[in-house]
Image (cartoon, rainbow, N blue to C red; front, side, top):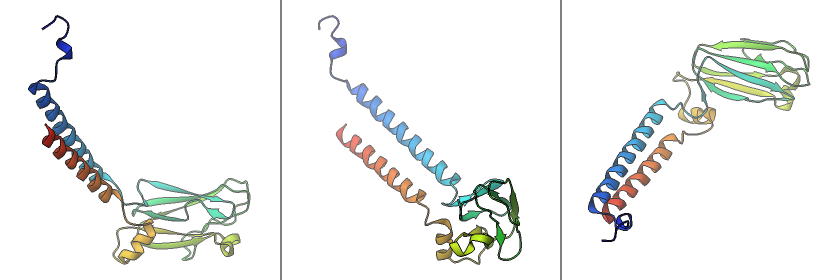
Length: 177
């Protein structure tokens, strides 16, 4: 062996074992990360936390249909040039008319599960309406929940796809080593 050529030698059996051990550890970390993500991920469309802000833009609500948990406060804020209201069809809240360009808002804390519809007084006939769906109840069917959240959660299928790909890659590496 010529001095200085040691780095040019083919990988030894020890290197292949180290590579396999590294891949196993990496796969374990990926799977662990996916499990943690699945456990902590909220449903698609669900808003978590203390509050949600809906901006009343020119003739539309920026988040017209939202899903929240019980105890969440939703605040509607005037953000457009036209006058607006945020008014519950059930009379639970009413901002009154807030002039365009003026600062104004109304807040309501949703405690009970259900679907709450609201509208803008001057622009209801132009489609400026929305709903707040509060989770935790049994009154909504599966189809209604899917519609309220914007569709089924893609977290689980994506996680399963990633997990399957990782397992296939790991099996392929085991086969060639």
